[in-house]
View (cartoon, rainbow over the protein chains, first blue to last red):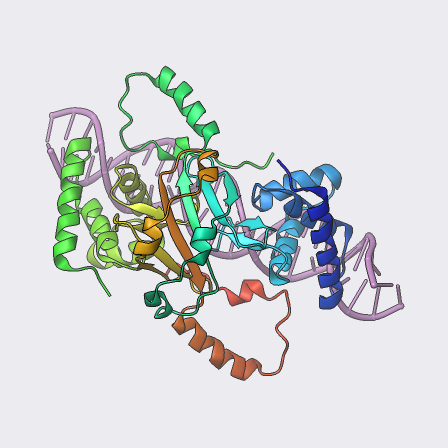
Length: 176
Length: 176
DNA sequence: CTGACTGCAAACCCTTTGCAGACCG
DNA sequence: CGGTCTGCAAAGGGTTTGCAGTCAG
């Protein structure tokens, strides 16, 4: 699943304008990195972007991906997903939206909720500090993982799933 | 700010019951690690728990903290905060609640919203997979950081804050 | 007593940074 | 052409793991 061409083009235009305005150079690498985030609905992390972009520019380095992603973030062209810090995922959808996240594989998807958007943030929150954004985070197990779970259940069979097996159950991203 | 004694005691009882039920040993270290998460409202990460617990058990190692935290998570005695994976923060408040997070220092606080809890999750979400939980994540800059920002503004003075200064602006956690 | 648990140290991996050459504007 | 940007390599720093001794039950 990808974002529509028209929307991607619109986002790229915005990038061009912003680069000019900020006085940063719009290099081939930067354009492709942005294009990747802008056309994906997967909320890729740096490594995922890297793998994709490498298909088009075989010489890009992961460093450039990191640097560019943060630059885009500073320019306000992408947002980060997650509480912030380490292993962040990026998001070029700047419209108001919310996230569904699979706790097993990390899949992230957007959804909208007019009902929530109409809600007022409780006053108690303002005592903590300023409010820049508010969104819903729904967690669950995505269909794909649920299916795998069933298969695994079949082979593991009667063993009670008790503690201690975390590291193995979360697939780690690997640099290919 | 800490959780009340009575609530902590209740949580510890639950830990004891769960350990017995799961057949895992309730060691001194595990008890103190859990007690730390259970009495904090800071949503500490592994390192923060480590620093605190070390005050009471000078010989604990960070490894044990990690192992125990994930074990508690597997036992359902603590939840994780954030989309999951790496540099996760833990939370022993299992009641329905929401999070305020400072994008500058990472401070995390709970709040409640009956209005949100009454909302129904959009049907579109169910297409992605099962729904285990849903909560609001409000992001902003906490009062403490806002104050520091002002001071810094004073010395940096007239320089326009454009792009490229991210690494420096996010204080990194350090092991003491 | 004995298997589960701990601490140690080293391995892992993701992310960042210094630097010299490449390239955009 | 000059300053920015890139790729490389190495450092940095958080998290995980193998192992042998220790301790809860």
